[in-house]
Length: 137
Image (cartoon, rainbow, N blue to C red; front, side, top):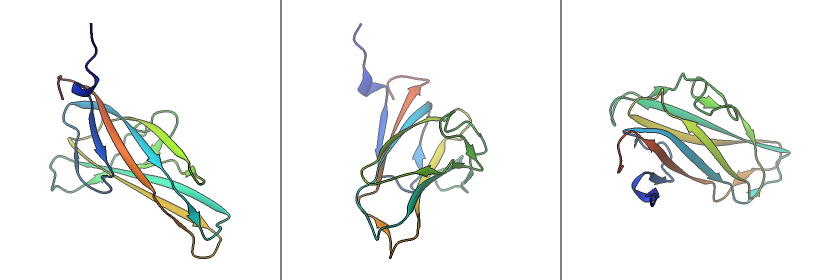
């Protein structure tokens, strides 16, 4: 039997703080890529805030499910554990969305320590939603 991957996943590219309708999708993979880091910081870390609501224009609140980032990146109050990053890092984070409401927002932010006006270029992400309860998505 042929697997129908494209009928069973939903791809969202660079949806920073945009409401994402996860209707029927129980999990996802969050892929993050960080480009050049300038300003010579001594350390760089990524934090990812995940909020959810029942409506696209609703009041988004932090996801309280501590396992949204599974065992690799457990969360507290909707923020996945801080992740040390460096130039050209590409992360893939498995998300368990079972405890989330229909709409989610993902807001990554990079914090720097030291350096002179540090910044990251080309920091972007994509979210692939999967595990549909009904197929095709």
